[in-house]
Length: 278
Ligand code: PEP
Ligand code: MN
Image 1: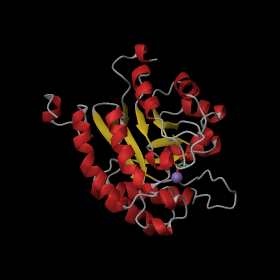
Image 2: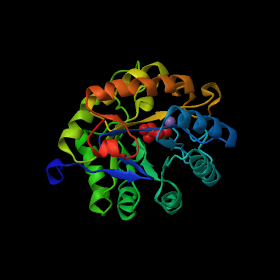
Image 3: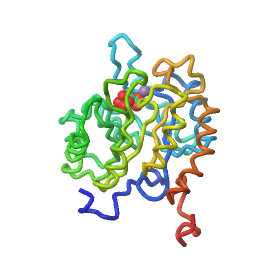
Image 4: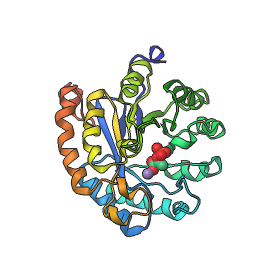
């Protein structure tokens, strides 16, 4: 796959580029829960320097009785919050029927781990012209993950970003096992941008910073992180949400690690970058 495009695919989204030397951070709550919750969280991540705002409005929950997301009204809140803070938005599309709505409003369409092999959805995503973030399935091999991406690419949509979010192993101390070697492998063997979701990969807020820095060192093109202004009140994944303060600390530490691997936090192209300076 890499051989077909040695320079690598760059995915452009609302003025941000994923897959170049700039490292892109997507952050926000697991789910959009209401106007105030979203505004506080969006303000916090924008202030800390995030490049995209995340927020689920259709939520794949293990229990049918758990909060399932706000649906379309939540999407409207997310769009408005993104505009207010100047951040493109990323949100999950769970079903093909949701695609027209989501493709109209979201800047990146997220395919969740549980849907990685929903081939009907993948085929439909191949027909849209919006970037897709494809999460690795709960127990998917790297090859299965790449084949899932191939479904979207084969349909003619070349804007695919891979996302490692931890896999299921015998280990139970963490929610999942972050497979960073798969990130380095995918960077070396494919032309697609690869990002890491340390929130679902660990399920433990204290591990998000170390795993984010490790992902940057391993060659990831960015991060997808759950940040909630009031984690203790979250309706979804509050136990793994990063606080705004900890997110700010992470954003301050990332540049040092990125510099060691000749990368930098993404910023709009300026004369200095064009001249090759960092
Ligand atoms: C999410 O991003 O909130 C999510 C449901 O992730 P995953 O599909 O990786 O479990
Ligand atoms: Mn979540």
